[in-house]
Image (cartoon, rainbow, N blue to C red; front, side, top):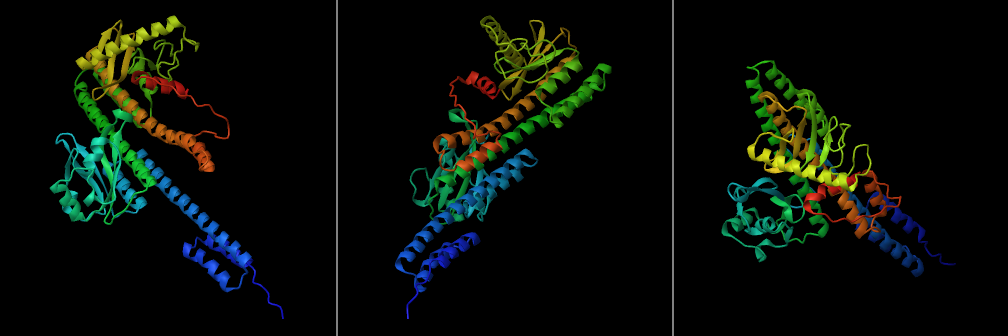
Length: 480
């Protein structure tokens, strides 16, 4: 009687079934032992072993893809929270909770800088059980968090207790010990990029046992920290807007006591506020102010170049829509000649000088037959609002013109915040395309499609260098 050798096919099929079911690695590894017990010959057994190794690799790849999908979902959810920002504390708690969940740590927490006290404090914690730890305050340079704030770089410590790279203090070590933390990863919350970025706090993930944080975990926490920084910056902008609107309301209370002109100013305030609430942009504000003041209005950027205009002013911008700053176009859409560019530069310089005078006096100024009002965010000059055709402005109209610059400031800040977020996402895509185009081609194509970029078509990469003053105008021109 002949002995029939068992086939490897059922075991190979079993591998596929386990993969489809998402079975753990132990079950995949057990298939080889099952084949050996079934009497599969050496040649087929080697094939089963090779298939098992391949199945384990596929399983790991699928796990990585699922983890990345979870991370991206969390980032998109966070971006959605930012878009619907109502409660800053709720958004920050959500970010910290997602950091703890995605990195699988025992705790996560966020610290913010206290500019008045000159130190940092705990703003949000998740998973913390120590009141002493939750009430910690860190001076610049103290502890791992102080090092992150001082250097504006991520730092990871597999064992905080024995790490000598940062300054240990009694109060901080006592809080960390009371919480039982051992491994800590901290990344900065940055406003702006490069050497000019401002550290406003730090985001941390920590374990109560030794742990080495992987580079992709550091990158994920940095992404969440970027979202937190945007949330804080947006909340501050909204607070400034609420303050500005409160000032407008106070002005309206005085206006209602005066003549019909004062009443018109109150109605004008309502109209501009409604523009903001309906999602209006700078061009809408310019058109509204022009109608209210019976003149022509232009908005220029911080370098004096036109953003939008009504009527025949603004360097050839006559359609009331927004244009890239300093796009080098003359009236009629033709490329500006050298003489026209020189004249445009002189005009821009004159407007910047007038805007600086407006900032110094905190009022609109009359220069060269037009009114100019600085558009400010704190002490930063975002641009200026220019009114033509009204050489004489009474106090109510002048105040209306000046208040319009506050609304314009809000819109410019919101637009910049959105642009920074979009540019960061696009920058990540470009970085991946340049550094690792073969790692996940399908993923890159999908990411490009979400950004409106067809990566199946050929593209050119243009690298340009510009000074700080020209960078924003260069970016606007590139978008066009």
